[in-house]
Length: 114
Image (cartoon, rainbow, N blue to C red; front, side, top):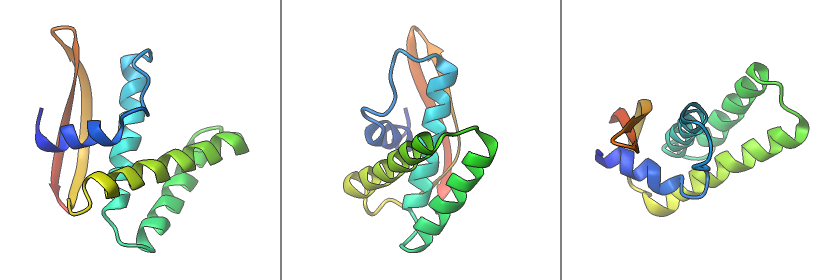
């Protein structure tokens, strides 16, 4: 596991239920990557990025008001975790994938400097 993979796993502790399917876990991990990228911006740009992300997410998913608020809260929490654990890391997550290898879920991340 590379360094950014471990950092994403660290900030996602408690966010992804291991009982979910691999596809569901990967979908949630992609939101972790998005939250990481938004947290690399300085305020207020990070909040502009979050607003755009949430608008696009809502447009592409049929969300209730409660689901929207929960998703936005989760994204804010993930950004706060990134700030708390890795405040000086400016790495852009470009893509990620989850795979099963020898019975374990492996996270592979491609990234670049922000």
